[in-house]
Image (cartoon, rainbow, N blue to C red; front, side, top):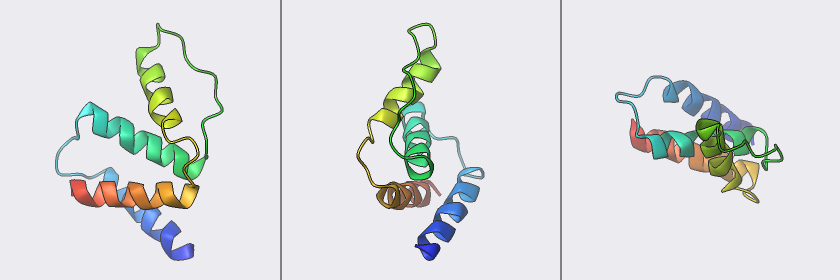
Length: 84
């Protein structure tokens, strides 16, 4: 696990310096995988219809419900590597 955590932290750092900005759906996936990897399943209250950005983020994160945190870290690392 320590190696995975270090790789994850490197991927988080690399995500801030990608050569080009990913599209919105990819950004939502990056956000959702990060939250799933660091917090676990989404237990927050779903934002209302007026908060479209918050709602999109909530739904993206909720889409990974049940995914183990280590699996989410691995998917996050792979996604960031594919974008470099």
